[in-house]
Length: 157
Image (cartoon, rainbow, N blue to C red; front, side, top):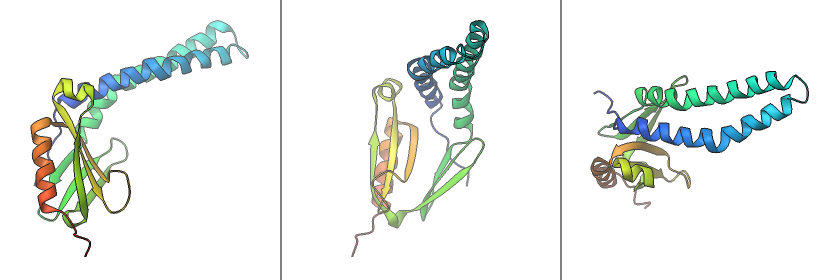
């Protein structure tokens, strides 16, 4: 069986989130790096290094989502949910249906704008989602949620 892909619009969502991160976090950090380096080297050189660092973060925000999308896949099999992710370090997670306690769908404002949802799969192992399918079309996400909820569930007895 072939892994299912996320909705291609998730690449735009991840790029937008990355650009916000570059502007809100990495821009001030780069300024701080420039100011710090200007104490030990010529100001122009410190500025070039800081700008180069910021440009590298910008490039990552634009290019990385396409790579992450390429290597992300999921498959609902008879006994489990298989989730694969990772660009450099690949990770495959198998979540047996009988270990699933509940499944949520969530949408942030940008996901709503793009018609996407996240499917979060929770097991008894903790408070955080053990499996996550970001960037699934909203209607498909609801179908996956209902399907996994119907298949899963250890009644705890």
